Length: 170
Image (cartoon, rainbow, N blue to C red; front, side, top):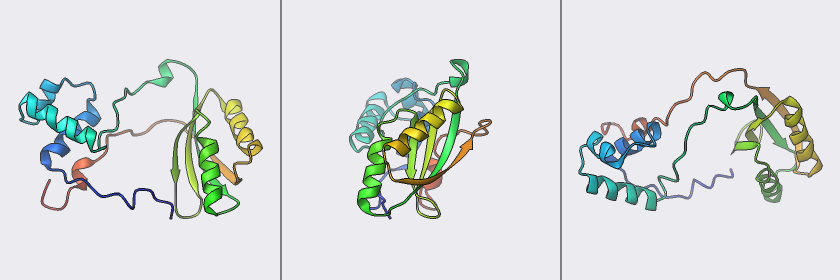
C-alpha cells in the first residue's frame, strides 16, 4: 500500500475543535467573532484555537465553492487508471506526470482492482480525450483507463467530522 497517511500521528481534538472544523467546512467565510459565538468561546480563545489547528496542519486552507455551471460549459469525468508496472518508480512517475495537468483536480491512489481514481474537469469531451492522449504520450505508465462522465451532481457535503469521534464523545 502506498499510503502516506499511515505513518502520521493523530492530533487529539476535543468537541469544540470538531465544532469549529464542522462550522468552517460549511461556512468558510464566517467571521471569527460569529464562529466564537457558535462554539461558545471568546473571540480570543477561538482565534487561538484556529491558530493551533492551522499550525498542526489540520486546517490546510480556505476556499470558495464555485458554481462552474454558471461560468462556462464544462464536463466532469472520473477516470479509473491502471498502471502497467507496479514498482514504486512507476507510481512516482505517474504521480509526477498527472501533477503537471491542471484539468486533473483530484487524484486518489487506491488499493483494489485499479490503481488510481482521477477527477477531471475540462471544457468538453474532446479536451478530455486530448488530456488522456497526452498522458499516454508522456509515458505516464498508464496501461488502461475507464471513463465515467458525470451527468449531474447528486450530493456534495462537508466531511462528517462528528462521526469520526470515538464512541461516547459526540
